[in-house]
Image 1 (tube, one colour):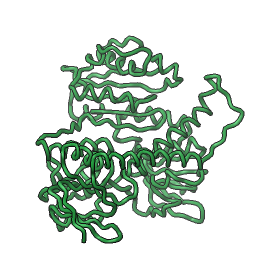
Image 2 (tube, helix red, strand yellow):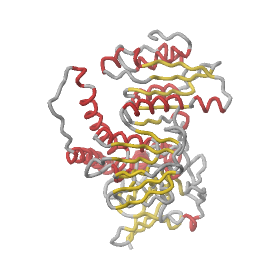
Image 3 (tube, one colour):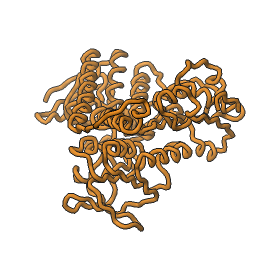
Image 4 (cartoon, one colour):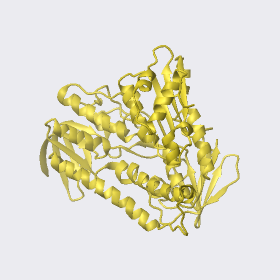
Length: 463
């Protein structure tokens, strides 16, 4: 058996793992990273964030060509969807970015091991390469293995007709009728893709609303806009069974007649991926959902073993994992590293996009915090009119006494980009007046955030 010595061994090369590896190498550590998949980048890059956004961009162009381009004086005699080319483009984007991470590993002299990693004991990690085992010795070990799709009882995944987002990113043909179970970000994004490409899409949701993590007012407005695009919603629907009969799926919901469709996308959340890590032998504690318990330094209950990202409690977001990876290794080397969990933005890449950072109105009410709200509709923004995308609004929530921004919620064009200004302002404990008094270029969409901040003080200029 081969033996290699490192300062830090990371299991998992997703957003948390690979960024932690790069930062640790910058800080002078000898770093190794173990990844079971051929390509680096984890779920986010290979079968999550990146390929889904590639499909969303392509399908939005098609949708706008059909719905909007005529208003711009651009007309087509015929539009044709070449699904094979769409998929090749998506895969090409993934390949380019995966190769980019490989080059970053080489640049930072990070040792990459292909295979399954398992911590035998603190300081010893085995890599099962398929052709034998390699033993790595290290001072520290970091678990960054990410998450896997959750399932439902009596909903048997077959990887074809009934499947998760992984398969829904690569359908060989556009379904006639796609049923999506779950009205979270993944379900709405992939439902939007296939709706735009020509499928009938029905979204089933157990709760009485979509996007439970988002501000309720914004979620309800988003639902209305998605319904205008033809997405059907059946809220308060408890799925009891899904079965495949020939080339059709039968979906049974409590209190409803059974529904036939071509494909079922199960998008009911994700669970920590810790398969084969054998935590019991290490004495690492996990909760009933499988999350690894860590302290403020991301340390587990086992000496010199740390964990970040989707395997620890918190929002399952790639950028959250990256921030934790950076903070973890910085604490190991410098003694200091910080993640501001109150300013982690969340984005849903439907059309229009939905983005948020900080507290929702519901949270502020539950916590008894006295706040003020400023709302600005995009129909009052000049740049939105030039884009032909005036649907949506922005909401700024600020403390009633101090005026400190507590939350920002955006529904509209390029909300995922606009939320960055709000997150930055909140990171510096800005007030709504700080944003209101900052000069914003005209005509731009960020002016709408300024107007929402002005509205919090009752002095919006363009509404």
